[in-house]
Amino acid sequence: MLGFLMGLLASFVGLVLGCYVLFLGRRALSVTLGIMALAVAANVLSELVAGGDRGSDLVGLQSWSLIIVALAIGAIGVALGRYNEDLAAKVIGFIAGGDIALWLFKVFAYLATQVAELPQDAAPWLGVALFIIGGVLGVLLIRWNREEALILLSVIVGVELINDSVGLDPTRGFTAIIILGLALAGILVQYGIYLREHMPEVVGASPDPVATGLAYFQELDLD
Image (cartoon, rainbow, N blue to C red):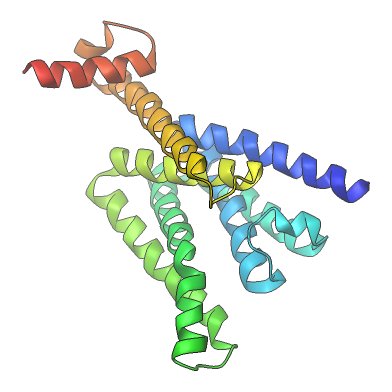
């Protein structure tokens, strides 16, 4: 019973954090960095150390020491974000890019161990390499176009957190519709907020961030 309640609490917390990152990820970078650091650390520890499939599995596996490590990394992320916002944006790019790259971990691990016949011990190192490569690409995205990259990466991570928390069945077609709908909603809300902050001439039409985003795209079509 205790394990069930803990798992339910972990799912609820993950859902709340995922919604925050999805819709407000670009705004308070210290909070976003803390959430992403916690989530990605939990995912990495779960997949590469505890043998789970996602970060929330650490609760089910009762890996309390790993949970404490993930929470500590999240706290460090919040502190770093408050200290230096520009550095926080680059770190967000790194951990978000690394987390996205880990989606390919199981595919590459299978190819390395089963097809290329490398030892099983090579799989964790492959995961680390994928994480670093994805992280570097994420940092480059932030350097090239910071605001749009922050929106895109936070939407992806937010959708991932929500999906992991709810436990949607990846084999169902309706799951793809939900994920795409959440991603579109996150992009509209965050981009609407961005326009309201940086494009006053468009903002005056509506205080609603979703309506602002839609109004901007309509103006582009008219032009």
